[in-house]
Image: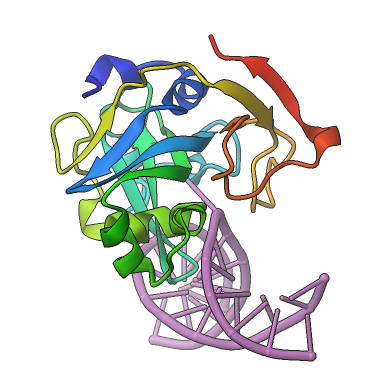
Length: 195
DNA sequence: CATGGGATTGACT
DNA sequence: GTCAATCCCATGC
């Protein structure tokens, strides 16, 4: 179980260090293989507009889950980071299924492990994470994040699916995982060893 | 109060 | 490759 201090750091450092950790909800769990970091200082972040009914969770204490509805259909989960009052969070974009595969298959209606959690909307469906978990604690709540046992090779590049601040290289993937939502073209890829 | 858009996905050409 | 589904909420009149 990660503690609050883990999240009370630069959102980009947390995004890197979350790759390889295990996200668990109930009996379903997966190893995080893809993250993106968002900070109030740039316009792609929901917190950029300030505190509103939608964004107030982002400004809460580190270690809180920010779950919101995307495109009217999907729930996306973030880990709130940095000190209370700063709007910053890590979007969890893909998992490699570890526990509860049959439960995930039932929720997703698909069989192949690489189809269960290879996208931010897919993994919340597979783990049964809904909007009611917005604001819950990742440090001792219904959703937990377990520390990684090995440090993966990290691939870094631009974030996906956004129109604003799309040039910022704040997407982080396990360079050796086949469970990411979408691989980079080889020319765009930057690989480095994890810290 | 009406309207437009979005950190996506799955189905279809 | 294109495109619709679907809904909360931020914005503007």
